[in-house]
Length: 190
Image (cartoon, rainbow, N blue to C red; front, side):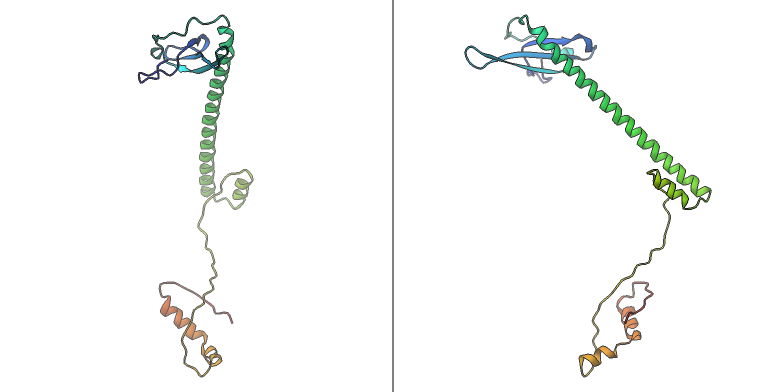
């Protein structure tokens, strides 16, 4: 088997799975033996979808396939066919799942538009939440409470006198002067 770049991807006895062969590809298994010791051999295999133009004779031939070769490659072809089928099923499931997700998204968007056009109440959002859908997105006012600590300089005879000399008007003036970029309505806690 050629690797498509002029090199050899696999070389040995090969078998084509006729049940899966098409004009453009065939499932091919190549088996070869590797000597472990002088007497024993280990058999290795390679299976893949191959284009007819990638099958070519080589000058070093491993010899004729042994009598047991057909029975040896049958389960290899069967496993490869099962793997291809499983891959096709996974791809099909992924495609269908993506289509379903897109359909649910479009249905959700349409339902929200319909709810807006028909002035539906918050029960619509409860229904969407119950069925795992997203409700309408609307604008809400959010109250935020911020606690701010800052240091002011005061002239006084003691720290207690300085602390007592600060009143609400002083704090408001300080905030306006130092945080004028904020539009703040505030209250001062005791």
